[in-house]
View (cartoon, one colour):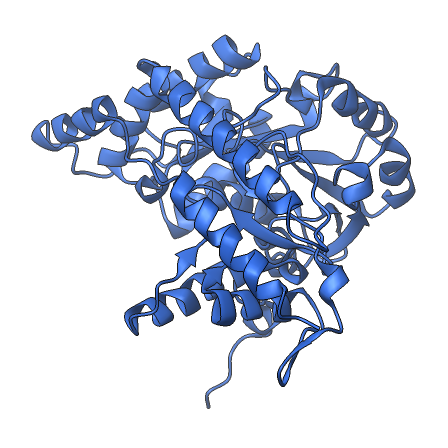
Length: 397
């Protein structure tokens, strides 16, 4: 009687949300937990965006919108893509969804079917493989370790492509590593893809504005790639609007139409008030984006410095997003009392229960030798969290 679908049984729960829930339970018990597990800016949504939302309520934006979003929002997105990325998209090529997560899933569900292979560089965001499995596709992992700054090479990509390859999922700046592909590195990947005309790229660029290397590069800008790239972005990270749930794709029209058709059957258009707030975000002043970016960069420098002082950690210098992904495998096999650290999930649970710092084990991201810390929190929290971690690992023998 209590039988779930095979589709659901194939899926794993989100490790990031699970760890956040576990830390919340400890907090509810009165434990002082520092949460470095969730990828969410700790800033408030800028005032001019909130004012646009208030005005939308007063102006009675309370009815269904078109499935792909209001024309005003899609125009603001098209203008942003032209202004900031040098990419021309018609409104018919843009579909707005309930967050970039739905945008990614729409594209996967529209393009991937049974027997199709999807290349996913590892480390990867936890939901990519699950979405591929939900679409009856087969995830093909290409491992890129810390020694290559967590970025795949053209040679690795070439070796992973088969006649069944349908999609490559790229995330730059990356969750969970913070690594950023340069324009030259993306062109190297594009050169491979141009030899394989049936492979489409899903380019997740939600962390576009949180980068520390200057101008963002998109693979859609590489010659011949815009016609076979689904560009995904949104407002959650750049404008501290995670709860507003607005993401979008910009894609070839045949893919946009497919996503529009799919979305029309299971959510329709995203929240009308949130759309008007997002319109103000894209079309309004951008100083707030730079202010938050500078704060994240300062925090990045702080957490990298402190993490490098923890014995046994191998730490790279991420160039974007707000994550650090240290290698912690030096502690595998070590003990603290009766507790044995066998893997990164054990390590993350050790840090939560012994140091009261919530992180996420790298197993969930396809890199079991690492763990993820989000530094989207205050300088004080970062300093105290790393102090606790350093003290806790010293007890591992």
